[in-house]
Length: 255
Ligand SMILES: Nc1ncnc2c1ncn2[C@@H]1O[C@H](COP(=O)(O)OP(=O)(O)OP(=O)(O)O)[C@@H](O)[C@H]1O
Image (cartoon, protein in one colour):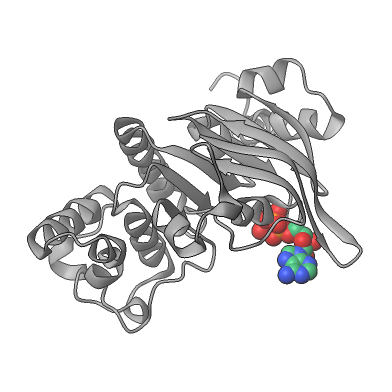
């Protein structure tokens, strides 16, 4: 469904994404995992042409994206990015309804969709629909951005740390409900995170990036069993190291 073939992005002399090749199958969620500055966001933005690749080829549903009109491409691809991009002068309901409205849905269908999406992301429609983005907390705004990306049931979703601003318990609940809905809808997705536990929880496969290079792609257990690089090994063992630390801190290994 999404194919990157030998994709490179350069800014001047600096290579920020270095000959990356990746395939995401229909209905699959691929996590892009890596440290800050490793090129995850740039890779994601090349898929919907918010950033143009310097070289290489990208296809979505078999179509070379350079042949698509960028705004039409983006209507077919839901996108949640770090800066959220909610329209400040539109209410929550209007923000979520933007793409369905562009696609010509009738108002009743849009209203019902907005209400069901708000419930999905655990926001009370009665309270939140008529608020403006500046009247939301960071976590609420993030949830509205996720709802907006799902609004027109796009076949492809790109998510850049969509749960980053949430407290850990809300984050865990929303990860679970997101996982359910994307499987139910059969959405193909690329999900950027630097959190290994989130990657293991949500990803069918995980792609590890470092300094613009793709180090390894595989299921979490493949990465754990046969890490191709010391950095991958360190990343996948991080949750266990932290769990051991917490266990020790709480007073021993019996817990
Ligand atoms: N418009 C730009 N001009 C020059 N360099 C850029 C530009 N956009 C990104 N970069 C650089 O490209 C590299 C990769 O950035 P990118 O945002 O893709 O990383 P990331 O892995 O998503 O990081 P984070 O987890 O912090 O969001 C960084 O070194 C960044 O400074």
